[in-house]
Amino acid sequence: MTPTAPLLALLASIGSQDSRASALEVRETVRGDLGTQVDDILSRLDRLGFCGVALVAKGGEILLAKGYGSADREQGTPVTLDTVFCLGSVTKQFTGAAILKLEMEGRLSVADPISKHLPGVPPDKAGITLHHLLTHSAGLASDFAGDYDPVDREEYVRRALASDLLFAPGTRYAYSNAGYSLLGAIVELRSGRSYERYVREALFEPAGMNRTGYKIPAYRPGEIAIGYQGGERWGTVLERPMAEDGPWWALRANGGVHTTVGDFWRWHRALQGNSILPEEAREKLFAPHVAEDPEGSSHYGYGWVVVRTSAGKRVVTHSGGNGIFSADFRHFVDDDVAIFLASSVAEMPANALARIWRPIFGEKLEVPPRAVDLDGPAIARLAGSYRLPSGGTVRVSARGNSLLLEGAEPDAMAALLGAEGPDGKHRDLVARVEAIVRSAASGDFAPLHAAVQPGVPLEEFRKEKAATWSRWREELGPFRLVKAFARPGRGDVVRSFARLDFERGQRFLDYEWEGEALTGIRMRSEAPRREIFPESPASFFSFEVPRWEAWKVRFEFDPYGAPARLVLPSGAGEVVALRTP
Image 1: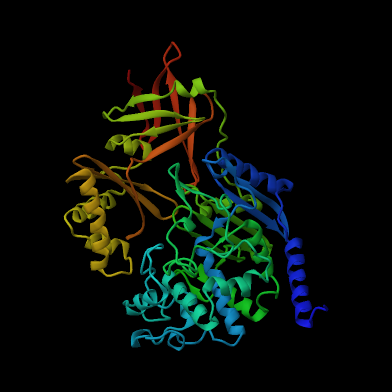
Image 2: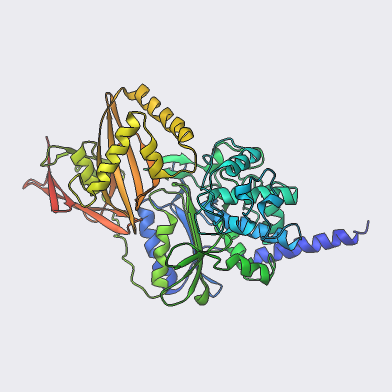
């Protein structure tokens, strides 16, 4: 039987896609001085627990493409270029491209009011356009449910449309995951397909991206990187509750798409030409539409951030993450340098690792210390308890080729965190954190709600937090007291730590603050701890990727060669903890 003309066209199209994908195949590469220099930095971090993947290219030539660490530590599976990572909010630019694709098809316009595509839009939101949603200028709060809450499309749209606006549409910028979820709803309504089905057929397949999506790629066990926090297995996003056709709607279209480094490279290359979007649409995608800050140093496009460097050069970028997985992509447009990073370790976020761009442009970057191998007895003999001058105890335990430092007493926590107590520079913040916790313990969650600004009504917020406190009291008994500390974080971020004492145990809170806003909360059942690695038999270090700095300690020995003292850095110089029998 002779193939029909449509079938021949289809076969030719498939062959063309396969040819493009093959031409853009990414293989493990470490090339030239720059590739070697960046590889050395990431290899050092690999020794400290980094699990992730990196790609660096200049002028379309790949200088570095390599996986680091373990995709699954328990199974001993290494990260390779085929390992699948979660992109977080880097997903948003796929949604931006999908809207522009639908505009090309004549199914909508970015100038359309959302009332043209969504039912039940109230008068205060009648002025919101698709352009406003794309540029985070609609005035919507960021979220109206948790990432894995079973909230379907209709309910999520209802919540967003029933919410109070933060400001009049189009008057300023406020990052909103919810705006992109509404765009995802519009993609489904205008295309007649699920969000994932549409972006796969309209964007991913033409770009040769067969390993990108939510559920459709049907990833096999072992293909997806496992997430880790504090050395403990967190798992994967796709192990969390999902709807039949993808994530629930607090995550769909604004985050959570998975991909490989090779697929993302093919996507980047496709956006440099007309195979996915014509030039006019790509100009909209990458245009600096709305200023993100009063200084106008960065602008938001359609799912992309556009930055002008101090030298006047343009960078198109976006990062994403859920506190465990993270991804970061930067295209230095005028120099045609592209950097893609993904991480599955909470303590090593991709946006902080992305400072590897500095050596590429001849700028200096501190190189993390190099960990050395010590034999088991050399590590084991350092284990034990070390008493601080103030009375607290730092416990040291062996962990393979590293040591774990722990201490739940207030002075031990402060020593391990390099944090300030109530008399430090951030004493007002320490007092505020303690006041927020005491109010929450009494059932008043208004101070925490004001600090978080979650975009949900106080009563709904109170129910969620009250359930957490009820669980803590059930497990640990009545609340007794709180002790807080603070220390500078990356950039303008300040981190505060609080130990909550109950009758039968503790809980620990790790807060991140940007100015008056509480932007990150981590709840832990165990005290903060540090894993340290040997530089020599007596000198150990940890390396904090977000702050990009080493924290070093040393052991001192008695005349018989037995460890006698642990010397820790402090704001006043050093603090010496004596080993106890």
